[in-house]
Image (cartoon, rainbow, N blue to C red; front, side, top):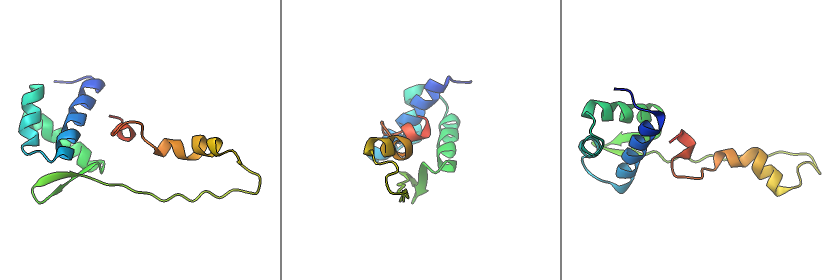
Length: 104
């Protein structure tokens, strides 16, 4: 069965929310909530593991924390407007929703 992108993202968001809450039986709960097979849930989990969004730790899944350091070099007088700097260089790394950076 093929789902729309919105439906896939809804399932992934649900999985991430349950992992974030520290809930047990994420696979079973997701399968029951969406009426899908456990294999389908595992496929989404595997995809998110491969993309570095979650990791398995001691038998349960955890969200991967990502931090990055940016160094912005500019010439004197270049890009003096902070909003321009934010819009051009930084905003793409700031997510508006919890999962937006990964297309969810």
